[in-house]
Amino acid sequence: MTNNDNELEFIKEQLNAILESSYDGIYITDGEGRFLNINNRLLEMTGYKKEDVIGTHAQDLAKTGIINKSIVEMVIQKKERITINQTLKGKTIKEIMVTATPILDEKGKIKYIVANVRDMTDLIYLENECKKIQSLSEQYYLELMKERGYSGKVIAESEEMRKIMQLAYRVAQVDSNVLLEGESGTGKEVIARFIHEMSPRNKAPFISINCAGIPESLLDAELFGYEEGAFTGARKRGKMGLIELADGGTLFLDELNSLPIGLQGKLLRVIETFEIRRLGSEKSKKINFRLISSTNKNLKELVDKGLFRKDLYFRVNTVPIILPPLRERKKDIIPLAIHYLQYFNKKYNSRKDLSINTFKYLEAYNWPGNVRELKNVIERLVVMTENDVITEKDLPNELINSLNNDKFQIILRDIVPLKELIDEAETKLIKLAMEHCHSTREAAKALKISQTSIVRKYKKIREKLGS
Image (cartoon, rainbow, N blue to C red):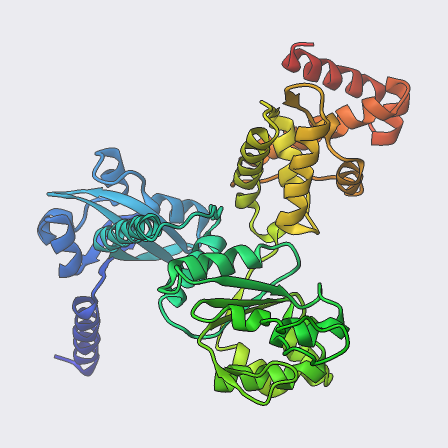
């Protein structure tokens, strides 16, 4: 045996060792798709014998229905690496992922095709089991909410809000300080009340204090209370402060970023010592409360600017929960609209409903005022509209004008065929042009197409709409 033969034998051994050591199935074909080699892992997946496969065409597997499509045929046609999912019908049906790579010769012709086959059946099974467990976890979590007697209503259809609600439930079981961050109107107080009602403190008071809603001159007395004669105009027998009212329960400091820096040090001492001292008193009183704070500003930036105490920031920010604005959780818009529609129908003894187009407009709007704005809009629609069915014409002008400022907008909820999207865009543009222009000639000029085209296309649109 020559040195060349020895070298070739050594390379062959190395190649076989690589093929057989792979966890994935591997096969090699020639440029026409005939099997040249196949490793034992792939034979185990398929249940075939090597001698039955070598020399046959890979394309024939699709023709006989063993696989649903031939990746080898696709590679021969495109001369590029391709990855696809396939269904393999052997002794058992398996879901596989195949990556096939062409090896080209000097002239650019396919010399070999090397394919890597991964059995996805177990992974898909595990994924489905995880989904089942997640579903059971959510169901269990909802049952716990009922068991705890949660009286509120939290809309959490979007994945973002579901994660927040699960985190809120977990943190409700402990007494860690929580900081709720988010734009105004995102529902921070709703989450705070949820945490309280899910906590062991749910039988005790939930005291909500809007730090921006109390005049600064009164804030000290309202928060900490005062003794008789503490200042001019003070009540006889004094007054208990709002913080003291939260004893045993939950203290919610809304818009904490508005708290004057002079009172921040006093609040920090209460949080650290759980002691309260009324104005005009020389005695401190022990209190026991769970603290939840909220902010519509970036507290870290306020700390950097010297507008918020760093030590207080670290005290209140043990568990941060960031609430996304409504525009970033579009899946919650329609469920929220339905919820508030039912709420105000009951409140005002009405039977209003929203049209499909109205829902589309509500979903397309960016809601700068978030959930609070949506609630106000629905209440206005229920109170102000005369007809039982609320249409897009009943929507507030500011909402319509905001949408009209976007020259072109299509609402996408899922991946759709490109032709379907183009057809929808064309229909919207032609209808808009015909509504704003006085003639087909003027509309054709605005769209930069021929008058014949717009007449033909508009006729099709009208026929489709049945008008």
